[in-house]
Structures are given as structure tokens and as C-alpha cells.
Image (cartoon, rainbow, N blue to C red; front, side):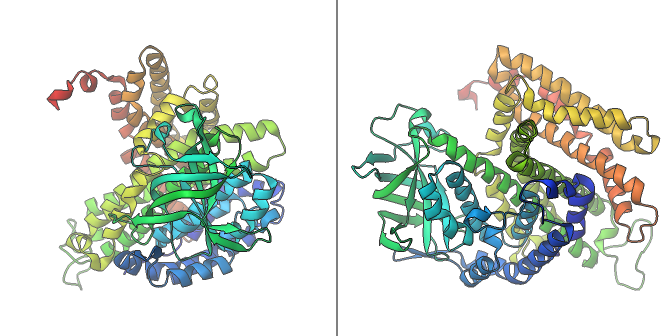
Length: 594
């Protein structure tokens, strides 16, 4: 069985020392979100995830979901765990207090989300999809729709989904065929088939509120003709009780590589009663809100898997006895030394640690931006925060899931043959994490979004939200000799990022394929610089606090920061060369030569 201990000390460091979460207490509605409260919440979340979710992770993967007579049965223990989850108020953690939520900041709820993903990624899919649906209804629904659906969704009595993909269209949503026919009473009859619908049908909640993209008969062609509709599994009576079963049924559930305890469904809509949410033919506006929230959530899935992989790799390499240290036996009383004494094992572990802790810092920075964008009384501050979140969301989604999958593979590698069999449980991390690179927009799509949309948006305004604080940090700390091992590598990599940005902006105006050809390398370069910024700031704090620290926490931070700068960040040079190489070698190759 796998092991997991919530990294609460590091979470607290990121919140209160690196990001400065005391500022969130000053935002309207956050006045009571004190450090004592937040740390108590994290402790309770760690207890729930470790004692309730972790024990049913492997069994849920083994059993999977089953479709019986039109009803999806989740694995043994999932219904009981979900009931405890809802009763404990975890579904309502970040919900609007107006509708029964606790109103806690994103900076807190995302850390709880990380714990859930580390212990049971499949389970986290069910409340995770609901959060996105809640955000869309709250932002675009009518007052009546909010009153009807949000209280039960936030409390966890009902759940939610997002229905985009169809057999003939995934990324290109302009090809959607699902129909929405208007009725005299203002409702619509929804007919069509949706595929890959996470949590589309299950036995955890009394009702499932589907948000469905569809096209009305008079809709213009393409993406501009798409509208968004609320389609409940059970109709809701005027008194709030459940009425008749709606015309939506699960056609089948997918037999997947991973996240097997999460029901991924084919959903058939046969003149199901639906209600327009937001404006007609403006459905993508609302759906993008769900997708952006989901993309950040998927990034947290990558982080959760990365943390779990690191912890299990450390535990195994400390326990597995094989060979002797090259510098002489470290444990002469044992038949062999634990493999953690070997340099290449340590290189792998340090790589895992540096990425994981760096990604946690990045996610907290973006979560802070979400809180400011939603709650700051200053419009300019809200706009700046929203810009930063928009810029970094494709990085959070793509880079953090790339690393979640890569670090899961590192974990298996360090386990050797034991990692390849199911007994140790770590091969599940590889299978579960693989989907995170695909859904909510593949990572290639995220790279195109960064280069094709975010980079030039509003004359580069979004880029300035990142470039300016990094430039300021470098300028303020470049004379500090103690910080030189961290600031100078950051400055060099940041310079390459700036040159690559200017190059792609110029080339992209002449030929969009030039920018697209370098998009994946550009996103990775941007990501590495972003984590370098986090590690340089971390090093500054650790240098100031390491004296008198008998726990070794800050020394560990400095060592890991140094490893990142010396052994990981140099990738920036190769990525810059790839970006500058242009499109020719890939685009000049004839199709029939592949």
C-alpha cells in the first residue's frame, strides 16, 4: 500500500512566508480566515484524506465503476466516503456563503485539493467537476437558477458536470451537433450524444446537474452559435424537491487506462428538458469559465500525483537494500546499503522534490491571484490579478501535469521491478496521471493558447504581469552576493525567455506556424523560469531564517533551490535553441514521407 503524509509544513511556508497569505485576511469576506483557522483546516483535511480516501484508492482502481441497469455503481467505500466528505463541509469549502458555502479563499481550498489528488485522484473528480459547474451557474445563471441549484450543489447533495465533447468533435467545439429546440414555456428540448463526461452518472448524489453545450435551430455556424444549458438528471419541482427523471441516460462507461473509480460516461440526451444559462449563442463564454477553473484543478492533480510519487519514492529508497555506497559502506551492520546512498537515486529524488515544491509555490501564487481577482475592492488590482491568472493558467495546467506524469514514472523507476507490479501501488500513479495531459485541453493546446492568445493579448499586457515582478526582484537582489547563486541563473534564463518572446511575437506576425512550431518549448521555458522565480524568492527567505532553525527545514530549502538552479534550470539554454530553430525541419517534411 502506498504512503502519504500531507506536507503541511511546506504548505504553511508557501502560504505565510513565500506568498504572504496574511494579505488575504484583508480581502472582503476573508476577515476571519486567520492562520490558526487555516492550519486547523489543513490538519483536518490531511486526516480525512489519509484515513478515508487513501485506503480506498487502490481498491477503487481494482474494482472500477460498473454500469447496472442504467445506473453507475462506484466502487466499495466511495459512497460512504463521499457522504463523510459532504457532511464534513468539504464540498462547501470555497462556496459562496450566500448559498451555504464557507467562502474560504482559493489559497486554502487548492491545498486541500492537492491532498485529495495525492490520496485518491478518482474520488476528487466528483466534487471537482461540481465546483466548475457551480462557478458557471453563479457567474451566468439567473437569480432563480442560482437559488434552485447552488445550495444543493455546494452542500454536496447534488453534483455537477460539464458536457462538451461529442464523437465528431473535441477541441473544435464549433462542430457540435447536439440540438436545443425552444419550447413555449421558455425551456428547451436537448437531444444529442456527449462523450468522455466525467462523473456523468454515479450513485454518490441525489441529482446530477449537467451543463450542456448545444445549438439552437437558428444558431449561426461554428463556435459563435453555441449556447449553454442546465439539464438536470431529475427535474426540480417548484418547492425544490425532485420531480420526474429527465430524458438523459448514460449510454456506457469508458474502460480506461487510469482513474478507474471515476465514471467517464457516454451521455445520451433524448428531448431532455434544459434551461438556457446566460445569453443565447454565448455559451462558450460561460463554458470557458468552467474550463479555466477545471484547467487549474487539473494542474493541482499533477501536483498531487507528484507529491505522492515523491513520498513513496523516498520511503522505498530508504528501505530497499541493494549494493554498497561507492564511497564505502554506510550501513556495515546490514547486508547492503539502502539505495538512497547512490548518486543517481539522489539525483532523481532531488529532481522530484525541486519540481514538486516549486509547483506548490507556483499554484499558491496563482490561487492568490484568483482571490484578489474575485474579492479586491480595487478594480485595477482585480484586473492585474486576473491578467496574471489568465497568463499562468496554461502553464499550471500543462507544466504541472507534464511533471506529475514524469515524476510518477520516476517513482516507478526508483522502485525497479517492484514498481511495475501492482503490489506497491505506484504504477497506478502513472496510469492515473496520464489523462491529466489530455483532458480540459491537451497540453499542446495549452501551449498554443499561451503563444497564440495570451502572449499578444492586449498588446502584451498579460506578459507584463509576470515580467515586471521578475525584473523587479532581479534588480533589487542582484547585488546580494549570498543570493547570487539563485538570482544570476534566474536572470540568465529570464533573459532567454524575454528574447524568445520577442522573437516569437515578431515571427508570429509574419507566419503563425513559426510561433506554433515553438509553442511547446516556449511553454516549458516559461514554466522553468516561473519555478526559478519561486525558488529564488524561497532562497531569499531561507537565507534569512536558517540561523537558529534546528529542524533543517530552511537548509533543505536552500539545498533544493541550489539543485534546481544548477541541475534543472540549464534546460533553458537548450529550449531557447529549439525555439530559435524555427518550423522548417518539421513543416517541410511531406505528409506521405511520415
